[in-house]
Image (tube, rainbow, N blue to C red):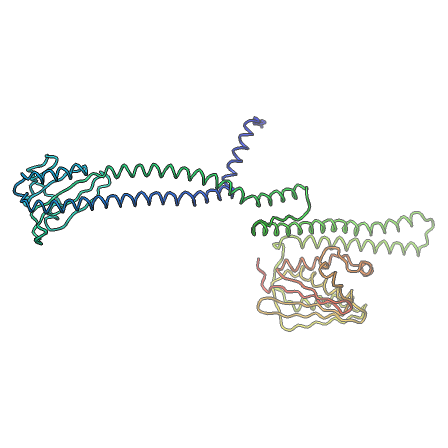
Length: 492
């Protein structure tokens, strides 16, 4: 059972709003805005981190340098007052306490036996301390380490007589200095940086939205103009020359619009011509038939004459329908082609043999020039129809006693068929239209020789189905030359 589903109007509005917002996130305007935001914010974040990191490195380096200088001075005083053997020096002890309090740190003095003889915290005096830093320091290597996680600087310096250039290490001074002030300054810097970053982000978002909207305005104008043409509000070419891209888009659209208009005109002309061409023989037959019906005791001769005219009109109607069906088949996909290897020399000889009786009635000489044997992959039926139309037209639109020359040549990729005649030629203004359906250069003359105006359209469709090309060169009263190029190997 199928049940009708009804969506409330409120839910429908919400659905459309959600779809509209999602569509905005897929738009070029949103992406331009994101790019502008990234260009504005990412460098700001990098600069902020760089400034904070640079400040931290500079502050730690400066504090380490100051503490190291103090330690070097104290080490000289320790040696001078033999503090490693006697820790009763009031001045040294006060300076050690002062150093510890100024830098919120701790100072330890270790003698040559690795015993702590002085601790400003009075916690480890008398204890033995054997650490990697102390051992290396007794070997003459100073240590300066910054523990960022615990916020302190550890400096280990050897105690030796620098004035006498004594390289013997008599003891070690270990100093731990707090960096809480530096950390507090960094926190303040980061807070101010985040505030500034938020301001920059808001400004960039607003600026990015406005700028992206301004940048996208020409594209919106293009869209609006196309919609107006689509809805039928205007029928003119559009022009949005704001950007090179919009100009290219509008130019391409105008070309497409011109092509669509041309196709629409061609469709209307085709329908009109088909209607006219099919109605004309019917009208003639009706007039002839009504003449016979409305007359009593029609002479046999007149009756036969009228029936002969009716028969000719029926043949003409049949030819138009046959050509239309052929054209419809040509309009189908190329997969309908029956491709096989064919000898083109034999094909042209057969075409000329079939048309020789028609040429004889006008005393037209048919000439075939084959420069080399040619075998190609073609649909024999369709290409025969195309070439036959060209040769037949060359015969029909020729002067009595003229000539038609068919030439065949080939290279490694294509074969070429040229049909030249000594006929009446084609006016220059008509050359671009001769492949259109039902187009006739001289309608009265075409009617006399039985043309339907579909032959060249059929020929062009057949050539294009073979991925070939056809060109025409003509001058009035000097003849016409059609040149056909077809690939030797058919490729889907």
